[in-house]
Length: 202
Length: 202
Image 1 (cartoon, each protein chain N blue to C red):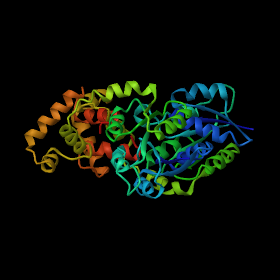
Image 2: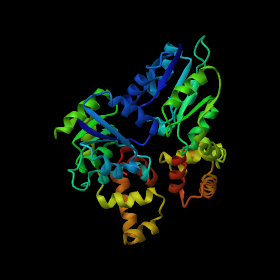
Image 3: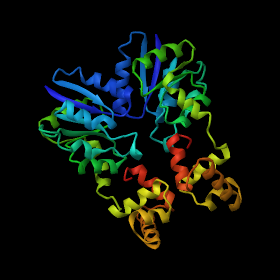
């Protein structure tokens, strides 16, 4: 029996997906939204955590690190993500969090079952249709520092506030913003935020 | 038999939801993503169109008007939406498009079936838990013109470009931006865009 924790933020979709997975005799299915996933991981101790990469909190960036952390005595669960090729930033984050499985939400739900079984064996599972997303993920143009600057700007912080938060001068923050705008091919700061959020970098 | 067209942009979720609905003997279920919903409406001529309010195109605003338009000879389908209380702007758009049913995505999937049956009879169905969302929808602070200005800004247009598009002077666009920032309780323009997108106004 493979114990699966399904993480998805929409209760209606999560319930139907969990019920659908429960038809498979070899799967024991539990479910949780992102905010309670870490505590559910501890109580359920699943073999596989199958998590949707859309998250309704924290500006849409799922707290993947919280899933990967070792839970008490049990080995950490294998991570499989439900992803989309047009948000390469989220694919990159999942890869950094050590996800073994990548199921395309634009594909057939049968892939989810196949992916869970494969990942449970400790093997990699990557939907072919996510290839272009990974290609774009490898091309992420911004440095970690530039992402911090842009992330604060996206939350509505002014140049002065960003400078204060990151202990930088105003001029340095302006230089970062100019570099970010150029590197993302944006017209201006708002456009750079829009592009970066769309790709899932932010 | 109630003919239902299920509209959802994620193929995996759409397939599982459609299969789940097909277990009901009185429902005939078809499905489509948003981009092909208008053409599917013409061929399927459903009694009820059950549409998820998240849309992967057009900056996340679903093209609800395209669903309501009269399809050839057949009466237009009754519209039911899958909604969330924390995006009141989308609830408001659905109400403006004449939706009869409002099913909370944070609720049980059984409500979806109940909602479809009720809406098929021409009756209203509103999940109680969406009440606060409707309350906030009634409080939308921006005028239609202010939304046009902010929408262009959110796409990355400069003051000059917005002025050109809407045939306004630069000063007028600046005045609109200042009013928008004040009315949304934002710190600056980027913050106003962030707040408005979060609520689903934009």
